[in-house]
Amino acid sequence: MPKVYFASDHAGYQMKGMLLAYVRDELGHEVEDCGAFALDKDDDYPDLIRPCAEKVSADPGSFGIIAGASGQGEAMAANRVPGARAGVYYGDPGVAQTDAGGKELSLIASMRAHNDANILSLGLRFLSEEAAKDAIRVFLATPFDGGRHERRVRKLG
Image 1 (cartoon, one colour):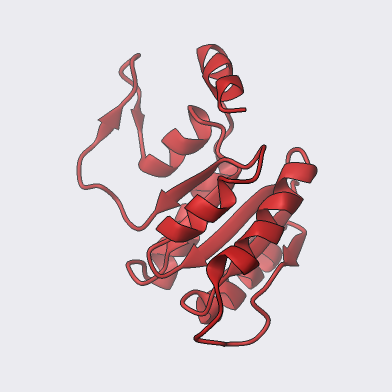
Image 2 (image 1 turned 120 degrees about the horizontal axis):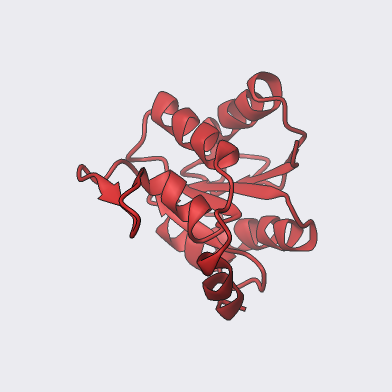
């Protein structure tokens, strides 16, 4: 099973511990906590997210779970690291998505299957613990489709 790196700022700090335990104890992955290690309302998410994204980038096949209030800034910080591909999730869009072949995909499955996302950025102010766990489970279980999508992912750098 691939290793999963975790990071969050103060907005994701409390739930991060529960999610890390879920991935380790229930899903069976090796995990590493990249911080925050204490609740500090004045912390800066780029300082916490970048080391996690760097570890994912340096460890092919691994994944990252990053979290904050909306997940947007965290994804922006992670995506500045070459080889990191973070997708944001803060709930289902409410509209079914189908790919070019007509296959229905959730937002989470799409970011893995079509974009080979290796980091999931969670907006925890919009998600319950159960919704976050479900998103992580789907993210970690969905393989990259490859094929025509490989060319596109390579262009990301």
